[in-house]
Image (cartoon, rainbow, N blue to C red):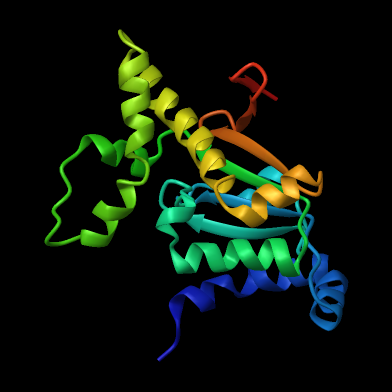
Length: 205
C-alpha cells in the first residue's frame, strides 16, 4: 500500500534537495548550530522558515497549541527538554516566542471544552488563561477582533515571563548570552509585530 502523502511530496522533496542539497549534507555530517530557538503555535498556517527566509539549520523549533511555555513550577517535560537542549547543547543566542492572529488555541479560551474527550487540551489551555484574564480586567469596550489580538499579544508577553522563571534562562540573560523576542504574526498580511519591553507595546516591523 502506497503512502499518498509521501507520493504527492516527491516533486517538492526533489526540488528542495536540488536547492539545499549541499547545505543539508553538510548539516548531516557536521551537526546543527542554529542561532535561535523559535517557539511557535502548531497551527498549520504558520510556516516559520518561509516567513523568515530561513534555510535548514537556522532555527531550532518548539511548536505547540498557542505557543505556550509552562512556568518553571509547572514544568512540562517535553517542552522543557527542548528548551534545555537549545540552551545547554546548541547554545542558541536568541529565543523567539511567536503568537499569531486567528489563533484557535486562544479562541478556545472562550469556548467550552469537554474534559471527558480532551482533558489534555483543557489543562494545556489553562496555561494561557491568565492572558485572557489580564486583558478582560484591564481593557474594556474592545471589539471581538481587538480583544482577540490583545489576548494573543498578552499571551506572548506571559510566555516571555514564563521563560524567565527558569533559572538557566535567567542566568544567560543576566550574562548577556541570550536575548528574548516576542512576536505576533498577522496571518492576513504576513506582517510581524514585535514587543518592546521598554514601552510595553507591539509595533509592526
